[in-house]
Structures are given as C-alpha cells and as structure tokens.
Length: 259
Image (cartoon, rainbow, N blue to C red; front, side, top):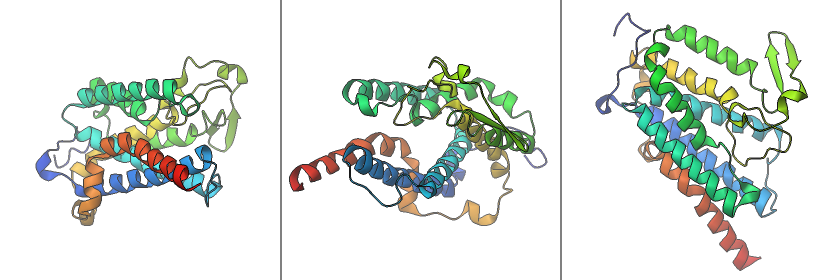
C-alpha cells in the first residue's frame, strides 16, 4: 500500500494495534466514572465535585470525541461492518425500549449504541466510495464540519468562519428528525448522540485508519499498550451494556443499607 494512502485500509487480527484498545479502554472506564457521578447527582441527589461545571463538560466531550474517533478507526478495520452495525442498532433499540418502560425519567433515545449502529449501517455500503477520496482531504473536511456543527443541537447554532448563525426556532418544533439532532424543547434523553455533529468525528476516525494502516504514525503508536486496559478496550460493548445496571445496583444497595 506504499504510495497509495487514499486506498481502503487492510487490517487483520495478526497486526492488531493494541494502543487503540488501550485508548478505547481508558475512554470507557472514564465513561463509567462519569455515569457513576451522574447517578449520584441526578438520581440519588448526592453532590460530587466537578459535576455540572465547565471543566467536566469539556472533559466529557473531549473523551467522547476521542472514543468516537477510535470507533471510526476500528470500524474501518472491521470485516463485517454491516453485521456489527445491525447488532449495535438492535441493542440500542432494546435499551431505549427498556428505559422507556422501566425508567421513563432516565429514558435513552438514540444513545451511543444506536448512534454507532446507525453510523456503521450507513458506512458499510459507502465504504469503497469513502476511500476514493484522499484521507487527508476527508479528515480535514470532517473536522471542519465538526467545528461548524458542534452546537447544532445544543445551542441551535452553526459556526461559519468568524461568525455564528443562530438557526430559527421553527426548525426545532418537533422530534421527527431527532436522529439528526433536530429536537423540540420537550425532548429528553439521558444519553443522546445525534448524527450531527457526532457522525463527523466517527467518519474522521475512519479517514485516519488509512495512514494508521500505512504505518505513518510514530513507532510507539504501534507498540505501546497496557494489557488490563487493552482487555477492557476489546470488550467495550459488554462493559457499556453491563456497567450502568451494576453501578446503579451497587449505589441503590449502599444507600438502602446505610442511609
């Protein structure tokens, strides 16, 4: 693949990059910490340091950005993107159904599982076309779009060069396009990842898979690892699905017995 940095990446289990698992493992562990703080503050009414502060918001979205970037990179290496995407989409739908019925105040609509599943299902049929564009052009454009649309849902704004445009309220009057990030003021989801802007981070990761495969990154990137965290990084789906009921159960039992 030398000299062909625009081509689709080739990857297999024998040249797995453990560092990607390490970073993904760190991200999912930090996500567990964040959700533990969420449970304490929002469900059990126990205040914690940093909660609802600009610093935590920054760290939250920084970790999310890295996680989505890594997810895009790893998806590009997958041999069956459609199958994996379908599995995640179904699990996301089941999680939505479960929370809607049993935890309506903490319902999850288009959370991380639904988002990743949708992105993989969209990416699978367009994979070859995506890699016909040189990776550095795709990466630059996608990062630019991420910066332009980063407040598309949260503040109803887009950022164009040195100006900010506030979108009309009439655009945000219903929830039919919730998956895109267009929602009404009454919309609520405890975990929400609309395609705009988070999809741009995911696809930027898919673009980065090309230079990673071509060994364009520093040598330590391909050798550095931490086996315990690598293990977590290789099983992020299991950790994500199980951690919240386990954490919630432990906290509920603790406050039930000692408060």
